[in-house]
Amino acid sequence: MRINTRFALLALLTAAGWSSQVQAQEKVLNLYSARHYQTDENLYSNFTKATGIRINRVDSDDAGILARLKSEGAASPADVVLLVDAARLWRAEVDGLFQPVQSKVLSQRIPATLRSRDDGQGSQWFGFSTRARVVVYNKMSVKREDVDTYEKLADPKNAGKFCTRSGSHPYNLSLFGAMTEHLGPEKTEIWLKGLVDNMARAPKGGDTDQIKAVATGECKIALTNSYYLARMMRSERADDRATTEKLGVVMPNQATTGTHVNIAGGAVARHAKNRAAAVEFLEYLASDEAQAYFAGGNNEWPVVKSVKVPNPALESFGTFKTESVPVSVIGMNQVKVQQMLDRVGFK
Figure: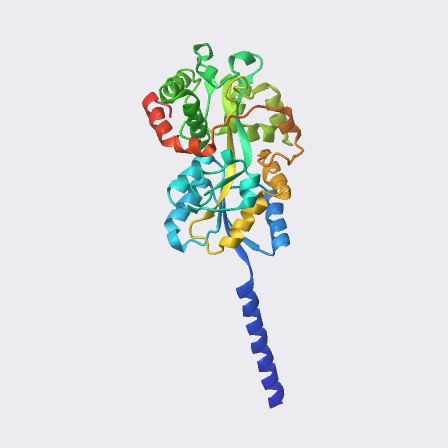
């Protein structure tokens, strides 16, 4: 009996040692994500199936994630960070929250205009899907030709018609940063003042609120990211679909600079403990399979042009010219833009 007990104890110790080895060898990835879309669950589970790397995820909004990274400092467990706007990605880069990545897969599949500048050590962040900043208008009271460029939104003929969310929201900061490249700072500030003069009400709410305000007649013209509109067009709610049917949609500046596009993107965290897994995950996001999930889950366009995501709402926008300003440059303009907004009273 004593011998059996010794063997049992030895077996338990051996099993425990083997279990600890397995746990030590388990590959994990700690992900901080500002994306909250159900279809991304398939994205993460498929990555784990393909690589054996388990994902631990922390969800928050962009501001919350950036604040957490700053407070955690070198102790942060984050390996990969996903954010949903170039202005936020640029801000995080400036704050030293990312590290550069050199990857042939990413450099070949992600267009140079949709990733941060490569200073010789690699890019610090990469865009994985795009969304357009479009104009919606009330078809009963506005002519399409009066709103077919961003510049025309500030024309006096549109006085009292314009609605938007806060000028300081990253979606608007990015558009205004792009306009600064197209027009120059002086003309951009005049344009911003024209937008303020044309407002039907003070800026408030999100992009969906602007869409509804145009449909109800509270205003006649508004800016929105394309995926908000596409989401309502595909909604199971009849009232959402009815709202979009009252609207006309313009992909602005087709005859000139092209429509402004922004990105959802990702980066390797500065203090990543699982760097190899982090780079592997970013490369996976650039794969055909992941692009279909990453973009299609939120009614966005893939950045890898060969990937096609069947989406009737997006297809209804048709093909369109996009601006060529690198999103990294747009991000760098946001401080300058905020100063303009303060001077013209754009809240």
